[in-house]
Length: 330
Ligand SMILES: [Zn+2]
Image (cartoon, rainbow, N blue to C red; front, side, top):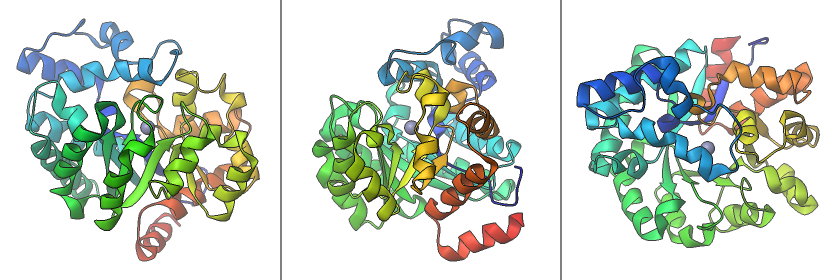
């Protein structure tokens, strides 16, 4: 980056970061049908070429990223490569998130085995590339609360290898109220909590994430700007907002980059951060997102650095490791 503050991505879906050429290679190896087998021809099926009408239309793009997860070795490979890509982007620390049920679904894999493979892939690559990575488990709202218990059970098998639990998916039809007990258990297990909220729904969904689920950070949180009391609450309680600019433009949550509330969050000293969400689908890097933040959202150099400092503060890391990270990039 342009300064000595660590470059951090706190919101990146491992299962939304699969390389195009890996999709093709694994499809050929396991005999999985794809609509195309060259990078250029496959690209429009996997990446966003024009903005989508909403989050669920965006999620459709994951189809071929999970279709090629034929066994645990494939899960290991995409996890490993995801960390290798972080290194390529010169990221100093990242938190990767994944939904084992979502990854297991296409080939009916065992969800606990998926968790095991992802943990190993991330840990091996993290060691190999000397890049610290935190893993966040996701419960997919879209499968409903019953399946979420099974998903939680699978994630629990590697309790000490995860730093937090997240809730993602269909925010409109599966509100956070359905998952209160799941997140109580997660907190009892010692995990941190971050929740996708205020992306498709209004500020009430963010309040629910904070008070009902114990969210320390909010993924997206766009609708917070509709609620003055909530904005003050986020600032006062240092609740992090994981912004994902390109993703929000592509899902039509914001009209364009210029209308994104990131700048307002920062001006009000809310701990907003800049992240990539699904770089494999959005075709962006963390540096792209910082560039868009500067040129299209209008952040000043100070605000860009403020976002970086927020990410360090909001990272699910001990203070000692944060200090180490800071020392390394100085
Ligand atoms: Zn996300």
